Image (cartoon, rainbow, N blue to C red):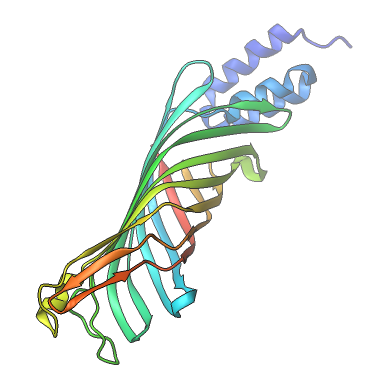
Length: 289
């Protein structure tokens, strides 16, 4: 029995696509099965980056450690995430996104204390799609900014130590890779891995709060940070109804800062920000529109 020519089959499936748009993946797979020579391009086309916006919620556990001075912070974070993807020419794309998280830090060091804290992180990156037999790989590179604020000024720990406001600012270069492949149930599995190279950082310590206690003319301190890196990873299951669900991981490893000078009425002393790590494990649910 003679098989229909490929052109006729393509026309038929295009009609089926228009009649049942939500079954686009099934059409692509059927066409790939009937015309093996074209399978690679069809699967790749279905998985390619598209214009989209995503908005959703995040929930995570958060841990900050300064091992050299035995300081630790743990928290549960609640957050929001937004990302916009815009197609450019020749298979390239632009990603712009921001995420925000907040929680109450459980400080442990010079006593214990609960401290409000939030951070936000924004990045913009350019990338390109590269198709292979069963999926798409999309490398990207860009610029990022992270700001964290811990609001502890004037609070006292369980041992009476005075706390102060802390603000961390990072400028970094994100270099990442997304991989997308077809998954069971008609969805898409998207894995992301990203290395964040620290370009410059600043640690603000609001030590002027000491003026309200046993010091006077106490100055705030800024410490410059020039060495460190971050890692990001996620695995998201993208459903046909627009929802994406999956776990994520964030990690920062920042080296000891340079020395800053803290001055007060009776003298001055050099202070620094110890080497530290931040780790966050979470789950997020995003909706594409």
